[in-house]
Image 1 (tube, rainbow, N blue to C red):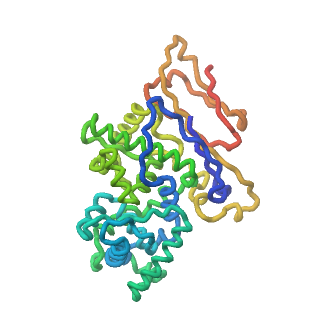
Image 2: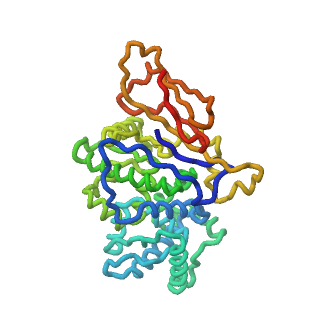
Image 3: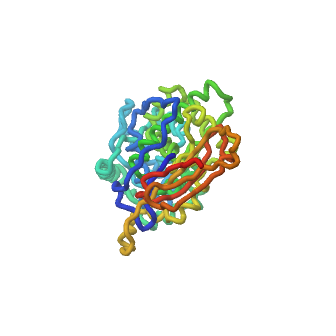
Length: 401
């Protein structure tokens, strides 16, 4: 059984104060050790903060792509020096920063672009807290003003309004990079659920991402070359956070000998995966780690749980606005999203009369959810119950009758 806490719309606590839940059950096969050269939990936290900021949701288009190519990358290359030194502790304007991230998400394309233009990889600085981000942006603002006195660091609203896709054909911006930016236009909404910001979610996601990469490594040796894997929500977050630091990503992928296989074996964001591909991913995961692939808050298909979450206004709860101030008559509440998985075979002559009953330990004491045993025999993990409970529920029991 796995749980994930979530507040409802008018009950979202301030960032960092949300209760945390423990990650899912540990498989019997054991998990590979983490090896990352960057703190992925912190990287994911900063990536989410940027994606949810107002500046990242602006109308980024050809103008921003041109600023990225013609102004920012040459500035970043010069600031880092010509000997392959570490990235300078500078952060570009928000619109340019978004283009840079989207380009980094296409790792192979970004590496090839940097090599052809600068002869080396232009890395992103390892800035993993808000204070250093603000300092790096201020430093960049001064250097930008000195180098490009006629080009504003921040685009105002009027310039953003003119920064649209209609002018791409008549603009000098790179159309390939522009299409990459367009691909990730809905990325912030993809991670809108409030539980995605929890620190414990990032820690658990990092462990699952490690397992996912190990699954790729095993797949390179033991399965057909056309096998592809579909990342779940939490794994996708870690993957993007990892790719946002190109040098670390390249080093880590080389370390586990899958550098040239990741993009071929993983279904990228925005790419539609077939049901067969999703099911194949689930089976490979269960065989390797003996645990369900779709945990609560870590679904593969967001549409499968989207309808239920709409009843709790997840989008409003994930916003920066304190809904408790708007609706003062409502008392803070906390919810858990609970998924109960079962697997096994029943061998009984009276199986048609037997059933399992799910009950709550504290709240909802009258709750009784029954499942006939005759329909439960399964060699793979199957989701039997999916519900939302008060945090005070504390636990669930499964009774055999």
